[in-house]
Image 1 (cartoon, chains in turn yellow, orange):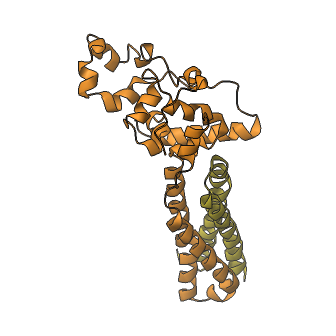
Image 2 (cartoon, rainbow over the protein chains, first blue to last red; image 1 turned 120 degrees about the vertical axis):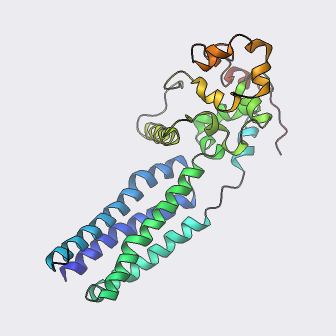
Image 3 (cartoon, rainbow over the protein chains, first blue to last red; image 1 turned 90 degrees about the vertical axis):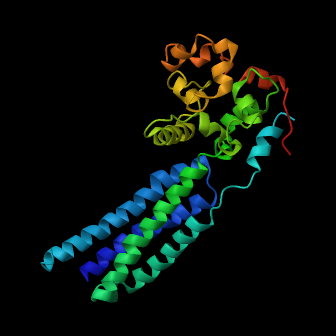
Length: 65
Length: 216
């Protein structure tokens, strides 16, 4: 259950980042470029990092490493 | 009439945006499905593989594709001139004056018209493009936080290397009588190209409204 919850948190960050990215790319202006670089990319990066940490934690708990 | 040249550039269709946007939308849709099914998927090997694909690889591809598109589009003349601070500089591309360097380069197609600003304002060195992008981000940040300065200046004197990147072995450059005896000093950076070609963007000429208006 914890694993799924962590996955959902990671997904929330990733989806939010991708939605922001989609809006920015639809009409790329200097303003949306800034939002893309400072909001969208970091949100997705946090999501990916959380997912990777979750996988690493699961592998460690199950002695899969 | 004075605003017309800038509009001519701004009205051009932007580069294809479809693919990165489609990838992002697919990644979002997959993300929603995985969010709802995360509880069940986390319990099986196949489910974990699906999560790996949907949470890690697909978003990664979407972000890389998006960053690539943003990188390319932010190098376009249209993008640069979408800031109103750059309108005068955009007009200077159409100035009817042979001493104004940006106008000569643009009108004679010495630079790619769709990337006219970027071709002269990026350093042709390792990470030069990246540095130009970071500087650009800083400019937009300043625009929204403290507002633009009254006048704009380059961070450093315009490097000869940027000119020589194209003109280096060009016959017109090598054989120009005015360049005779100057080439070694120019290549060595001891004499700046701007010492003689000092007109810059010719904003004063642009303000007078003498334009070459061939653009449709």
